[in-house]
Length: 396
Ligand code: NAD
Ligand code: USQ
Image (cartoon, rainbow, N blue to C red):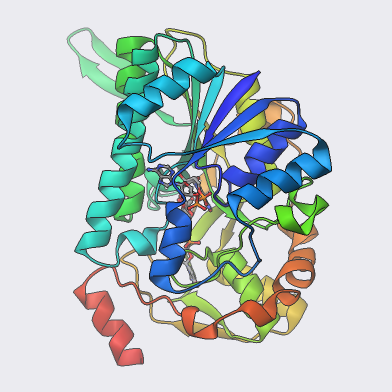
């Protein structure tokens, strides 16, 4: 089985490429290394010492004896090269991680909004059009987000992607399943809701086989493969733009920085460990939709937690202090979140729980590499709007 991993140098993409290679897939990574350039722009480095793509691939060959290919390409800008690559490599599947994925980065300035929309929507549209152009029957698995649902669903158990509604017709009420109404909380999340429309269109118009994985916030760093050699280590983002909440709290606890809870911390979010991410992608690739079927949508998350409860759990285990700081985001202070994830459980996923993995992450990664941290990069300074910017200034 052959697979292209678009965005395979990133936090989720690199361990996925290794996992699929270890499982016997013939893997080629496509990435333009834009994430590494954004580190240069933001003047911050991954907490873990990630190696160059060349060193990573060589280390994997040393450890496993297996080859992984690499193509440096901007998906969304080099259409003819992309079509040629799909025709030459003839993948069974493409996994699409190649998007700008940080909500705070997407809200930093007008330029960052434009870049995120341009990069993400063009990447997805080029990929879909290229698969059609190639004439091959390629299954596309895209990494989407739980954030497409929004966080004000008033206790509704979020179904896997589609919503059952009753509509009035001339013959009386009729049931329909519609794409869940999009309710994005940032420009980044908005690009994912646009992706969903592109998928719906191409699946119906061109019979493309597409799976959209609505993933929660990924935590952890290492997988079975990235642990095998320090040269394979995965990236760990802790800065105010790219660091996600749980990994930030773990790093903050390790370096003695008070945990930065935004507002009351009543925001409830969905989480998944990176090891489960790579397993879910493999399960999705092994269980594609049939040609002519609608887009298969799965909720790729394993636990929902409130931000303040996460902070309390980590403080309890580590003795870290908690600071409630002004929230730079325009978001609900308190929300409930109940999510259906039956499909992955039915496919055999046995999730890693927060209770099992948290302390390993603090000691093996966050404390181990603490001296690489630049504490000046920890605060979240990207404000969603003028009102939020003023709140941050007043607090400073
Ligand atoms: P990441 O930024 O670490 O990796 C993305 C990779 O894609 C980077 O290596 C980057 O260089 C590459 N890339 C971006 N645009 C590209 C383009 N136009 N052409 C070629 N390469 C390009 O992000 P991640 O955390 O690995 O996330 C991967 C995907 O998973 C994203 O689409 C994100 O929306 C989704 N996701 C991530 C999380 C999370 O918590 N990290 C949660 C849910 C969903
Ligand atoms: N938060 C804090 N303190 C912090 C950082 C964040 O309280 O120091 C809060 C935020 O205000 C927010 C919540 O934690 O309410 C989650 O923030 P996050 O940065 O961890 O996650 P988010 O911006 O939603 O984005 C991340 C990934 C994105 C993915 C998304 C999945 O960067 O790629 O799509 O998680 S989900 O949240 O399910 O939409």
